[in-house]
Length: 216
Image 1 (cartoon, helix red, strand yellow):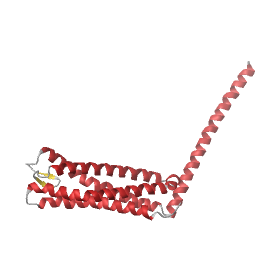
Image 2 (image 1 turned 180 degrees about the vertical axis):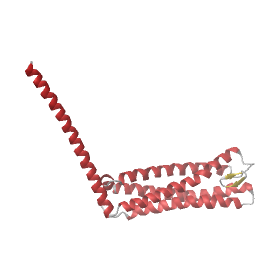
Image 3 (image 1 turned 120 degrees about the vertical axis):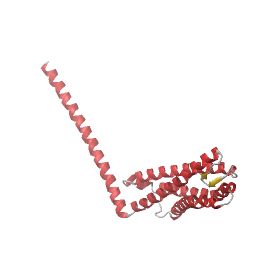
Image 4 (image 1 turned 60 degrees about the vertical axis):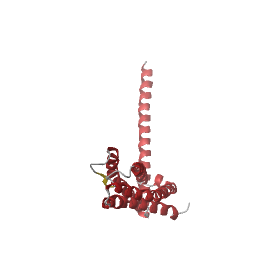
């Protein structure tokens, strides 16, 4: 198996960077800038159009990241099994990825609904006003929270990716492999001791039964 996986790593890192950066820019820039539009009935339309134009690029970035992450998980599977801590890191990373995908997908669904009601008067992209229809206001309030959840989750992925890179250093690999081997060896010794203990108990019982028969 090749030691270098430049393409997979590039897809993983570039996709994640665009996912994180785009979501953060949208929350700060697109949704915030809509407030500067003079006509309250055009603000939601401006914000929705900005997100709609970014959506295909964001989808491509997410797809690249997922493919790269899956490829890395496959190529690094020997370390997942053999190096202590890598399996736990991979599980956390997978959980964060699934959560980020779910929140991103739901946010896009909310955005598509808002795009259909683009002429509703609002304060900004995620801020309703007194005259905003209740259903539109409810979706905006949800997006006001989710717009920060996405960069928080993807930022967490960036941090754990950095941690995964540290785990690939030779010293970390050796220490992790030794810890895993020590853990396996300890488990085997424990199992042998348990089996030996059960055998001893069984031997004592058989001896007692034999003595009882002789006494009879």
